[in-house]
Length: 324
Ligand SMILES: Cc1cc2nc3c(=O)[nH]c(=O)nc-3n(C[C@H](O)[C@H](O)[C@H](O)COP(=O)(O)O)c2cc1C
Image (cartoon, rainbow, N blue to C red; front, side, top):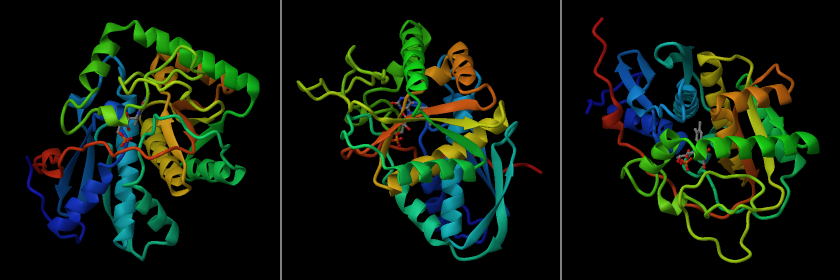
């Protein structure tokens, strides 16, 4: 357990608040694969290699996505305190170092996104059958663009049906992989107490008639007639770079998109199977034209409330100060 000290002109309580906001980011199976190191003039964000899922995430791509999402939250929390974050991305070692790049008051949009941080949840429940309005879609696309990423909205019928097949194929591959199954098992159903996907957040049990194969977190049995929505908005978040930098950039974009959705009253959940299974990801990339790199697949719509998932306490996430 590390000691929280004041940094970047914040006192210790301010630092705890800012880091707590960072940790409200999503991560695969709620593994929370991030750590922080406090220096007198910086906050460093590092991946936590002990939290990577070797079978589900063999090259740490999802660790970098989660850390990128935490970095986006950290930036918002600092901006809301009048600090312009000066971010150095270090995707090959630490994820990023954040210093003070100036001071100015936060704008309205920053405040709206920050207010959405504690409200955002992965919502695996069925959505209402109302379509997502075009203006909301555009706001999501812009949110990804602002973070140097690309949001591919799957409106084309053929592309959509191709993606549905790829989700199903990757889902089957992972269901037959004992390593992936063991990781899902280890992080499902209230274990550990400060991580994983609790039963209350698991959504409903999957059924073979489902159009989109959601991951089975052993949720509630489905009541008769309570199926998933017929036509959710499905988007593929892509980076322009392959490799570590693409992951960290896409992670920030992911959180920008998710918070923009939350601020617009939308809910979202992930369909990660086709980006986790390498040959399927390569095929998805080709199906999208070959240039951009698919990083996350999201299902978006109007949902009903779901509870927040647990997080580790900030002192448990602090690394020892660096010896320089
Ligand atoms: C890279 C990444 C991949 C994810 N993949 C899935 C997925 O395939 N299925 C799913 O239901 N949730 C997925 N999630 C959502 C996490 O399970 C969720 O973020 C975590 O349990 C914390 O809950 P919260 O998002 O409600 O805060 C993913 C999250 C991230 C960041």
